[in-house]
Image (cartoon, rainbow, N blue to C red; front, side, top):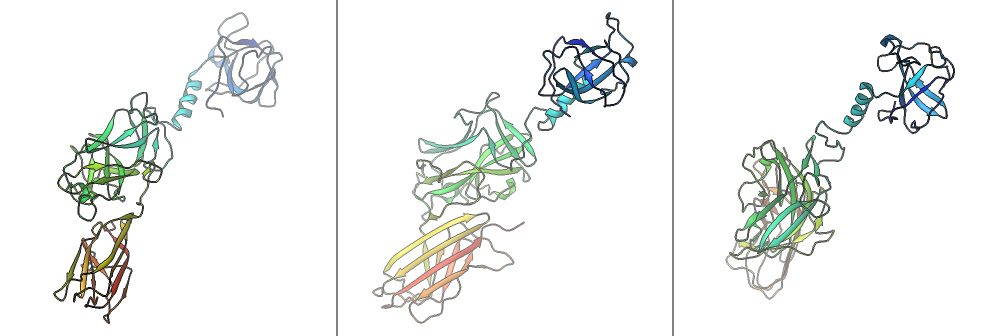
Length: 409
């Protein structure tokens, strides 16, 4: 059945020949001029006599079908609570808009829309309709805004739609969050990360009082407000436009990712690159690019640090609630030193589960005669023990592996 049916204003005609009951009758009309042929139509039979006298309701029948030439075909008898009955030649046939027509139309609309008129779409959480992320820096301050695809703020005539949980929300006013220079946001201005590009994940969240809010964070795995740190210098912090009425269970979804850099020193000024399809992603994404950082190292065992570190290279990426790290350090044989252990600061702290440190996946060591233990992470530090850093012996150590940055819940 067509729920969306067209009609024809002021249409009236008559039956060419009489019809009985059932669906084997041929219903031929004296005129079908102006009637739609691309949708079904509901025609009213015998509402009035040929002289215009209104008949009792019990004599009226409404029949739904399609017009083909001068014939009503593929029809259904007795619709809209009318009674199927025989009609003689010359019976008046009209198109009259009815409650059933309106109800079918509304039922058809509500198949894909809610009662506020918002479209019910089956896209996964976090996908924007008519929306995009626009990061920018002005006076060293970083702003992350949500704009319509035309570049303008969302409005009643330029709405953005997003699914958060099982609800589609419309955003009809400007939405942005700004974090000013002068703070070591996300610990991104630390000696390990300052001046290095970091990938940030953009979130939209919702609660009934604040409505839809926007934020950005270094972690991609959060689905509720409780999973973010509220400490602005913490690596798991989320910069959110408003948290006045935020509670632990508020839903959050990732809508994309962008790159930004925080400078070193007390100024902590923001900058962003020229954006392209690699460093600004306009869809839900849960992993960073491979990024570089400069790990701070400390030594233990013995008394003298190695002097000739020729190469010290580190990279990392974050995927879901795991961080993958690669670190290679090399010292030439001309360096003095007698340490047997070193540790490096991780790009984002790991977590301890079951009161045991997480063991990384692999380590390779060349030089000396010592046996290197598997590297382990505890919080922000990755430790490697059993390294022989003795004078006159070249050595290198390679750490590679995954570690969790959040407990599974």
